[in-house]
Amino acid sequence: MINKSSLIIRLTIALALSGFLFGVIYSKLYYKSVYADELARSKTTIEQIGQTVSTTASIAAYLEDADLAIEVLNGLISNDVILAAKIDTDTQTLAKSLLYKGQPGNQFVLSHPFIPTANVGVILLVPNEVFIRQQASSIASDSVETLVLLIIPMLVLFVSLAYIMITRPMGVLFKQLQEIPPGESQRLRSPANHKDSEIGQVTKSINQLLDKTQSLFNQERELRKAISVLEQRFRLMFERASTPTLLVKSSGLIELANDAAQDLLVGLNVSAEETFPECLMPLCKSPDSLDSLINDATNQGQVKQMEIEFESALTHLPVWLNIVIIPTESEEGLYLQIFINDVSYRRNMINELKQKAQFDPLTNLNNRYGAELKLRFWLDNQIPFALLLVDLDKFKPINDIYGHNAGDEMLKHIAANLKECVRNDDLVARWGGDEFIVAVPHIAKDGLQKIASHLVAKTAMPMPYEKDNQSLELKVSASIGIACYPDHAETLHELIEKADNAMYSVKLATKNDFAFYHL
Image (tube, rainbow, N blue to C red; front, side, top):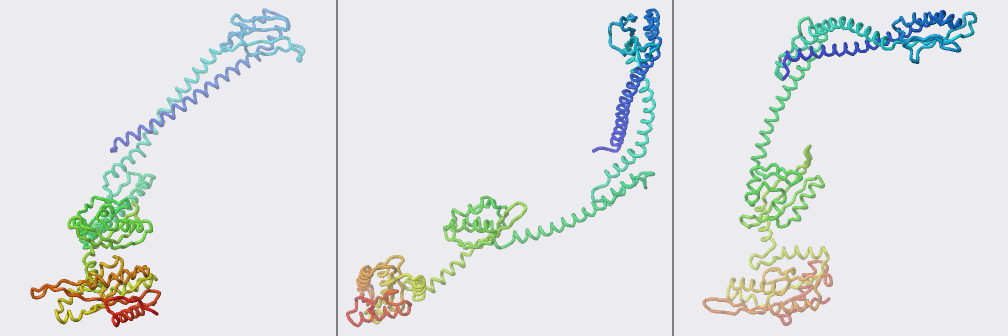
């Protein structure tokens, strides 16, 4: 850091150098000016000398008096600025000095003494260039020396005044400014005799700037305190939240994961160091759904939510996760706030309730409610299907003679046999008591007859049964009525009624058979 002394020294040296450079430049310019003036004065002198001797030289040329001409030349070359000279008439060189070697020079026309319009010759004056330039240089140098002797005291005086009036007060201000800690209440004091000067105004401006700086520092301190409090509260809320929460960059890098999220990922044997959703993909039962959820939230910029099934890598049990994704734009780019809830318990409860509501607990077949849901779906979507109403013959005596346990075993036996006669997508349901229904979509009449015949045969197969250490074979048969949608009816109620009519026609006739409804 620059201290006061070095600042003052530097400013003083800068001022001195500035003055010195100014003096050097001005001296050079002054030297050139004086030198040029001396050259011009010498030229003028030669002109004046030529004009002075032209009259005498004209007479010498007119008279062709060589002695007079030589006398004129001797007078000319006695002058330091004339190196050589010669006088010519119209017919001859009348006279020339010893140093004349044919050099060019200044020519002056010699007029006729008596006839002003006539000429009798010329006089040639060769300037002494060496002498002239030496003399001009000497005069210019002497002038510059004189100027320097005048400038140096002025420069010293200028530097001294600048040091006293500017440099030293500025150094004092700079030292004070260095000693003031940022944001503190200390202020600059105006140097002596500078309270109302420009330096005093600078001091006031700096103090005003320090006031504003202190105000900004105070605001920043308060803002930092508020931010610190908010950050602590946010961390407390985020880290202690019971909902697993992740903050993920658009690249998939997991920036933050609260304690609940860490526990969830550990339970799935997944590391938070991996990228999202790649860390969950191997465990996901429907990876396309998870990938679609992320892409939709990112591309549409909207909140997206979905329940997706996973398999725990530790327990290999199904885990249902409700994933909510909130895309958030920031200065650093797109972030995804991801909230994950384990809804496996709720899913299991729903499945259990669904099982109880739609399935018969004895046979594990759809009950009437579950069967109606599927049949109404087919009706709503106009899927053609055949409905077979199966009523057991000779079932009541089994209940009366062998007891209800035997009756229950017979119902389970019949249910298993019925399922063997149809495809996986076909419907087999316990309609109530000893009645069952079988619904087969998209089937031709000949195929339907084969299924009905197979159902009659399978139903009539005896069931082994142990009672009181006796091995028995219990046997029932089935009367089956068949109605088709949409050929025989267009509503479920009418379809059941038509199949029931066909079934009773079999019971009243032969039993152990099937019949189609006839219009």
